[in-house]
Length: 367
Image 1 (cartoon, rainbow, N blue to C red):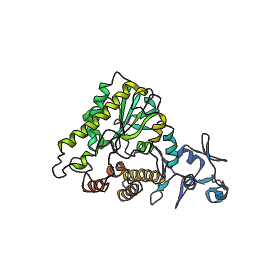
Image 2 (tube, rainbow, N blue to C red):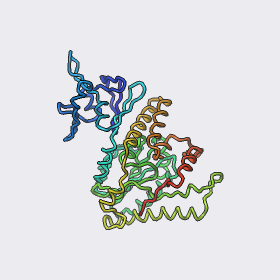
Image 3 (cartoon, rainbow, N blue to C red):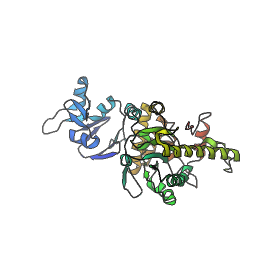
Image 4 (cartoon, rainbow, N blue to C red):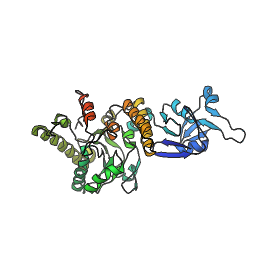
């Protein structure tokens, strides 16, 4: 039995034939696993077709014979198209990832990529169903102090209830870990669970809290940026947890400035000084690399292996993801050691923070 993960789809294929780095699938298997169709002209989805190179056809295609359906080495063609393919040691779990060019093209269009995620009750929510409202798409996690921001976002939603505005909070975390914080905040806005970091991969999110502003037409007004947090925590007394009053005040002022900008946009829309014109917004879109695209594939594989109880191999896959995408604190911290409060702020975290030197942990939102 072979499981194929693609985007937010997980498909079990009894007739798949994994062989080393090859994944032999029938046309029916390919469509079930990816939504792509294998046609004479190649692998097609809508108007897009990936042809099988003539020079590779003999190696990548097994023609129909003796009541056996034709098969394509989908892994080979997938890699050839610039998209990552990773799998476990047994070849029973495969991830067909999205390539960096595909992610970049989607973001440069400034049309917010759609996704569907569950809330705590398992009810699915799609980004597209909130079309017609201004959205603050914001990430958080139980392992970050930003878990307390849920109440802050609620106060903003309540204050702006006379405007066409809401928050969509995405927990880059498991439902079990996120539940106590969501229930304590009792938000009226949607809080969704994204343990596999699909939204992070779509929007180039590397930390929490990070946010994206999306207008009523589903257009990205401000691409991924820090949601008002600062690097003041780097000056905390690590033995007492105390922060100098002036640094605490500066941190609060930075958050207040971000909230004021959100309020202004919620009330004034495109007339707001904080709503970026398309060229400026496009210039701020994160540019994913091939290594980052592969990192998300390894992370997805690691998450799946954890669910299957294969902890040692899962750890190796997650470590590989962090090696490929060292700038993603979200990938690293989700499985980092936690302290008694459930925060991923142990010695390993501080060592990584110190290694940043002059590089910011939370870059300014440039309001």
